[in-house]
Length: 458
Image 1 (cartoon, helix red, strand yellow):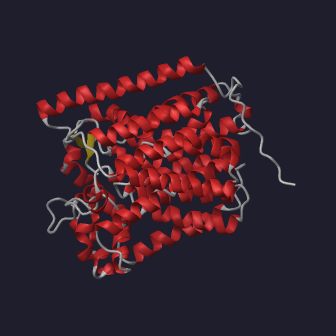
Image 2: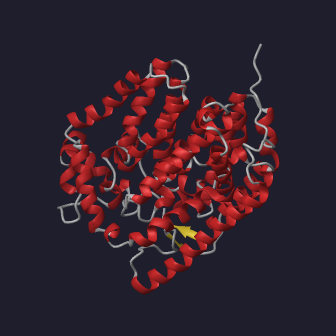
């Protein structure tokens, strides 16, 4: 007989610390942070020009507009708010996962098409900073990898565009491979990023179910669909990076909870290897991975398989002539040669967090506040037992990774896309919230307003 998973009682003080008033205060404080970042940032940019963004704290510009995606986005938002919470209760697990992916696809496509097909999808990855500008330089992949380091610095001959230089070559090779199989050009690249990036929502749900129980995963589902983060998941390659990292963590969660530990562990390791060759900053996914290991009852049996899988990718790239550490050293120099050397740390160290508020939305702010209350109200000996503290620990690990990235000084601006792989793991904290429809409406309203009032730079 199939066992029904225990339901989390949101009336339990351990799950519902402080109530609605404290939620309102947290959201108001986050709103003031965003307002301060906008006002101070606008002043700094107008006076000194050092922020290098058009609409602080976001990369973009004020441009009220609508497009073919507008009616669809409104329809998706209304449908998820009206029916999402009830469907997540009624649907069997596997159909729910498909519904979440389908809903995330619809929401992300709709938001992208608010800017039109060319600006919103087909042209996103073809600008002068992007990966598609250098596809022709990868005709001989091994030779290009051996020579990759020589073109990272700004003063180097034929230096790479900003995004190519700022990432390991795995990022660019994604689009080289698409081109090789006949899916070249901006339209296919944009469609790939949207399609692959939205699977991250499914990976997060799989992980939450294995580590914190099905009830909390189901509560989180509509928030993963209707996330403001979809604005950037569908417009930058970082959506693809976020999905790879999310599936690595999902497979690790399956491995350490006893689900075919050899195969899932090996798969997790391979994807972790791919992850760090997509983005240098995603080495911080290790913080979330550590939380997954802790929550997985500390089962160490899959770790040799994880390690074996992980070593494959560095071994291949190193054999082909690419030195990750040398490239990263050169990237740090390149970062300070460009906008990163001009943008003031004293502003971005807190304005980055304002960006994150806009990416995850007010519901996540309230959910994280409740998650913090859960951790503070749970005895140390019980932290790994109940579903609520386990989920709070998982979301807290993502917040910790994000804060480390912030303090490093290598994430000054553009974090609305760069931090997507961490921000997505904050969204499950919304499962602590009662009355989900109101919070979902707030999430949708924020995304729709931003998408229709600001023309993002990604």
